[in-house]
Length: 183
Image: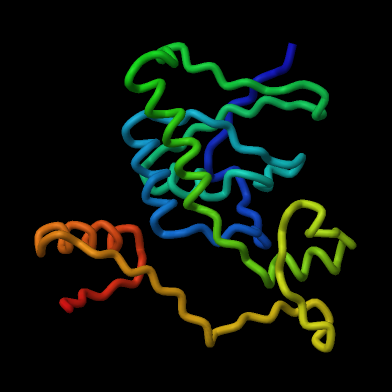
């Protein structure tokens, strides 16, 4: 049986080369989920308590005052399941947690191309084999190139000013750059 060790969030070390810079909107959804439903998913740490996966969750947990950590040690040959004894999947909270888990994953990913390029070069990792597509400038030896001349626009036609204001506010809350036009 795996031993469970008690620790503090402060015992964990964030990944200084985290590939995900996170989005403001995604982090706000993680916070909303943890505040409304509590912790639901584990994080992954290495043998030195450095965070491999779950930097964003750990950051939010610390910000809202969660301090205690239960560490289950494993060698990767077994799946570790977190069992919430207070929740049934077929309940409002259970289904909302499932939705929150998938929704935050979808909107909280913002690749850190520089970190990916650095680690890819250092450890000879083929990132394209993991579905990651970043452009690397060969002259600068693995330094990512970013095209800052492109602008992507979504135009939404609203039926009235109230609907326009509602969408504008929603998109701003998500951290998107918006402007209101009346044509």
